[in-house]
Image 1 (cartoon, one colour):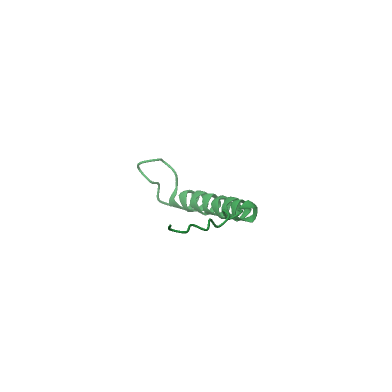
Image 2: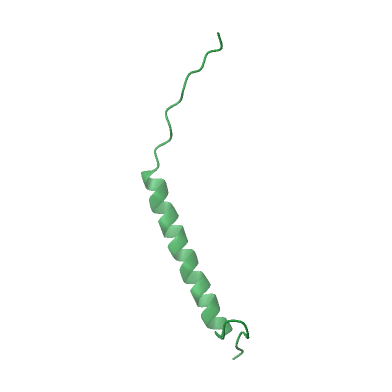
Length: 47
């Protein structure tokens, strides 16, 4: 198995860490969207 010279992790471990971070990001964004309330529409009339 090859090791990345920059961070010393094996490529499989690096891929697994990226996938885990991606899953956490997706779940946190879904929870944020669940709480999202769009701003009220403002009716502006040019006088």
